[in-house]
Length: 286
Image (cartoon, rainbow, N blue to C red):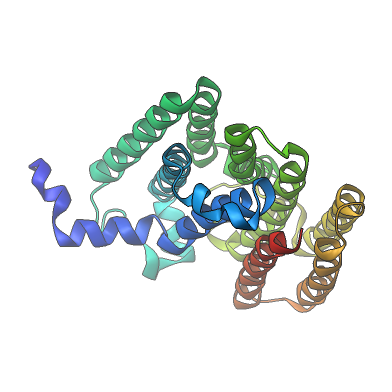
């Protein structure tokens, strides 16, 4: 197959579906809002938007994230045929070799951009790329380890902003903790949603090892620890985020208690995305 095949409309559409454009947009938006509202001032937003170095860093983060989606779907194609057969792209719209090619190019591009900006950022990009590959290949099939890996990587998207600007690192770290916790909750909920296919192919996620009932209890514990941690970190700065978080987590807890179908857990996963969005919006009031 010629290289030009990669640029055919069917392959481009396949890649766009793969890399989950909305999620990538949210990653970029979060980093930019963090820079505008947590690092600078509302009056300095134009300076942030025109910062070429920051644009390159955000681009690198988005590329690493997209590469992670590609390699995850590459390894999960058999599981996805069980859990989400209508959304399978590998082997149907995109050949496996082109998935790997896209993954490799995106990672090398992101690491190159990071190294151009600074060695710490370049090494962070490399570490993220390696951890995403390891997650897709092994870690996601282990109880909790894979969930924590993705949570840490999500938090790192904000830590990169602090590393780039070298300002207000504490408040950004607080939001990184927030992002990591809500991502951990969402990843466990997704494991419950996908347990049928995961179990068939030997995955050992928390719902498979301990059952759905105990997984719900584990989620409640995480949410309690989450609320306490955010309150301790932010109560002297602003009560907006802790209050909003508490109210949304109470609603989520009731939803988890009632959930007993794949569709119900899928809806809960969507709610966690909304909580993340509320967290990002709360930056405006810090």
